[in-house]
Figure (cartoon, rainbow, N blue to C red):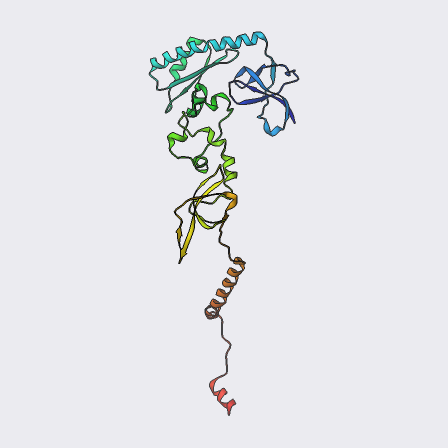
Length: 326
């Protein structure tokens, strides 16, 4: 077990673990830590706790110190310089006529690097742009291309539900979302209705998916024949959340053709019984017997062919047989 603390560098960003290294962080709100890209100013969101070695990403970086008032001031100054750096980079992008959309700018705590985030439909040759930016800011420059989901997370906005985007306000990390989740929840597969402002499937499709899978257990399919308290019926539609099944009762049946009632009746899932065809008992055993019989029927026909290669023992001559009869 390893003692760690959880630090977040952006609002609704991913939580990273660090080694407190014996520093008392019980009353701290911000800390200075060492990261792969240099010294960073982060918010302490998870207090000291014990985790297994499998949960950490090696090597585990250490906490340098609890953030002081001076550190907070430096961080606020870095935040204030972002807009000027953003405007400068926009001018350089227009000058070089590059097809890229600038999204955000970030200074490292020690001002050792300036990171520019952008989106683009394809690859961009920004080598000349980096040279120009380096001559202006006199520090290391990094241009990082991001996807549309990360763009929405950085820029924030209002979703189709009327609330601010989950990814930008509280969702720490993106989870995979598939079209199957929309199908399991009986949602319209119209892309405009199940896609977020980023153009990808909405993250909220994941939230209730497990609940739908649990409620759909034992739920009949549309067109399935079921048994209700009033007799046989055919399922017209289902409502998963309410656990209700809409059916039309069978009023007559001749030679396999069912006559259905015109009215639709609603039942609880627990009030109906699914009619499943019973599988024949010992199906495997019967198949084995049939297979054995088939082999026995084939064996007499196959034996003469197998005996052709064998030498026959000499039998008695016809003359000797006749003498024996006399």
